[in-house]
Each structure stands twice: as C-alpha cells, then as structure tokens.
Image: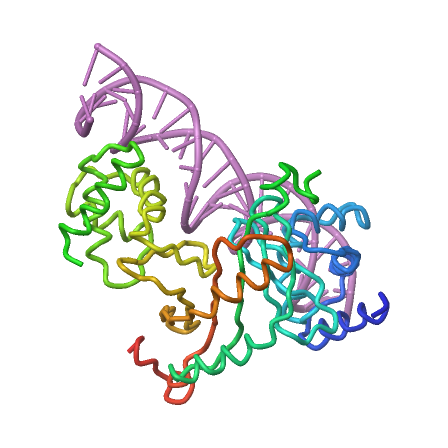
Length: 153
Length: 153
DNA sequence: CTGCCTGCAAACTCTTTGCACGAAT
DNA sequence: ATTCGTGCAAAGAGTTTGCAGGCAG
C-alpha cells in the first residue's frame, strides 16, 4: 500500500470517529508507516520528531491506541515492560511471535489456527473471543554453538 | 499434595541453590500455597503478612522468582500491568488462558499442543524453545444478553 | 468561534535496588 | 563468625493525566 493511500485510511478513520486531523497525528502516522519492523513508543517518538520537531511523547501515547483501533497498527506485547507495535496494512491472518531471548528479535509467524482455537475454547465458556496471542520464547542455537549470534555480531 | 510435602520441595530447592531457609520465605510459601486461584504479588503480600507481620513487599518480590524457578509457582502474564501467579504443584501440561475482559476472570485450559508448536516453529529458526504462551481475550455473553455477569453479580 | 488537541510536567503503577541491620548456617 | 537475607525507602521504567493555551472544523 502506498503512503497516500494508507494516510487516507487514517484520515477517514479519524473523520469517522469525529477526531481531528492534526499535523501531529499525521506526523506520527508517517513515522509509523516508515518503520519496517517492530518499534516502541519511544522509537516512534524519535522518528516523528524528525518529521515535526514539536511532537510530544504524550501525543504519541495518545495516538497509538487510535492507530491500533483503526487496524493500521498491531500491538505486540511480549511482556518485556515496553510494548511493541507493528504496521498491519492489509494483514488478515492471526500472527504468532517467536521471541529470541538472546538477541531480542521478534519473528512473526502466521498462525491462522489461533482464530479457530479462540472460538472453540471461548464458546465452551459462553464467551465471545476478542483476540488471541501465541508467543514462543526461545534461545539461539548458533549463539550456543559458536559463541556468537548472527544477529548480535 | 500436602502442605508439609510441598514445603519440603521448597526447602530442598532452597538448599540445592545454596539459599537460606528463612521465616519470611516460609511464610510467603505458605501464603502462596493457600491460594486457590491466580494471585498478584500484592495479594500474596497481604496474605503472607497475616502469617508473619513483618514480611515486606521487597521480600515477596524477591521470593516470587525463586518459587517460579522451583516450579512451585507458574507466572501468568496477561499483559495487564501486574503479573499473576498460580500454584503449579504437579502440573505437567502446558496451559493456555482465556481472560474475560468483562469480569477479569482467568480460565486455565490445558493446551498440550503448544509444546509441539513451540518446537516446530523454533527449529525452523534454528532456535531452542524455552516457553510458550497462548491467551484468548473474550467477552461475556451472559453479560451482553442479560446485563449481568454470573461472576460480577 | 467553539471545543477538541497539544505540550509540559507531574502523577501513577508495578517492580527493582542500595543500604545498614539482623538472622541462618 | 560469616555472609546472606531482610525491611525500608527511594529509584526506575513505561505510561497516563491535569492543565492552560493553540489550532482544526
């Protein structure tokens, strides 16, 4: 998806929710759109400030939920204290994460069965599933064998 | 498992690790053993203080990892800010959680396939799995239909 | 013009840590 | 007698919030 097209989704979502299209929100959106991998609120702030000096941390934290609700971003909480976010343009499958405890890399794995699992298990409890997450924590074999991780150098 | 038997496991684990068997650690252990459901560090502190007035928050936080490593407890992080813990005496299957967003109940579901999934996915990345978690967030049907949740009243 | 949005800084929550005293081995 | 463990209080990290002024609609 192109930048203008994605930005349009964001504008429309804001309008739909009765939210204003501000320069700060657009700068934060553009910064998020430029990220290729997972990023934190702080990293997003850094990048957004390069696009618009005055963007504040508070506005980043207030805009992240908006972008998550609009499905432009996906929140990835690996239980590490800080939350990660990731572009979610056009994604339609549930994703699992494999987190390397040695180099902190997060690998995204398509896991369509999660949706089925969520429904099955929820219905037995008379609940309606909202979301599901599946995460695997693991250690690097290469690091253990050779003493260095390909991603750590 | 009986209380003395479980306490023995704890004593042995402490000895094995070269850690001292203190009155505080035993009080915290007994408090944890009395919990039937998931509990937080704060709840554990409350209960432990009923058994021994002087138990401090710091010691609870320092003891929780010890009990987790000894497999007497299992840590359950549902991404809600605070961590939950649960007795894990003799459990040998991977558990998934279903979390009700309406009443915050946590249901534990046996999910043995998680182990297989973790291995399969990790090996493709040349990683060795350490742990996995699977969680479903859901909403209460009864609450939606009748306006009241059986667990909220 | 109205009132939502913003930046700033302070507040908040949960958890961790430095220190001097106290207790287990 | 050692040394580890403890309580206390302060620090820490990430995130949220109250407020006065600014800008979108």
